[in-house]
Amino acid sequence: MALDQDGVMLPRLRPAGVARRGVTYGLLGVVPLVVTALSITHRSDRREFLSVIGGLSGLFGAMLLVIGAGLWWASAEDVRRLRDWNTVSTQGAAITLIGPLFLRSGLFLVVFGAVAFGLYQLVAAAPYGSWWNS
Figure 1 (cartoon, rainbow, N blue to C red):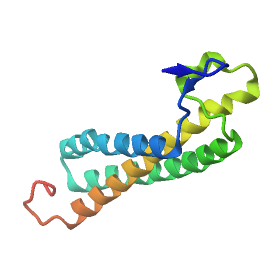
Figure 2 (cartoon, one colour; figure 1 turned 180 degrees about the vertical axis):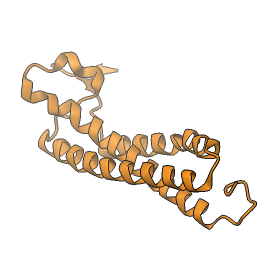
Figure 3 (cartoon, one colour; figure 1 turned 90 degrees about the vertical axis):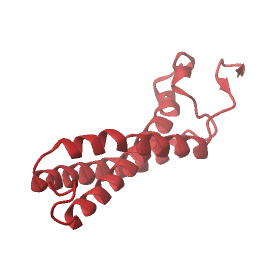
Figure 4 (cartoon, rainbow, N blue to C red; figure 1 turned 180 degrees about the horizontal axis):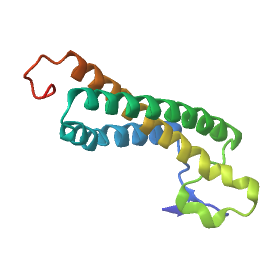
């Protein structure tokens, strides 16, 4: 990868790339969620687990998404990867690293929470005797 005069990797991060990666990680996080949900034996416990996971993930994800977008906006054109940690020279320049991290984490949690809420609806509507309602 090419480096600029400050030693920062080029090309700079773009919001679309960070968002795509966050959504991909959120969708990949569905696999352990489904395995965990299926390992819970009682339907009411499974519904409670999915509702709590969905609610907390959605809430914290929305907060991280808003904060990350704000930090990305505040860092203007100087958005850096976490690998560029050694190029940060001032305490205030750390937001150039934290903005993309919060944005990606927020999107991961929002997608993860939405899927957990969808699974909650699926478990709630499952007919008796199905493998979701065991």
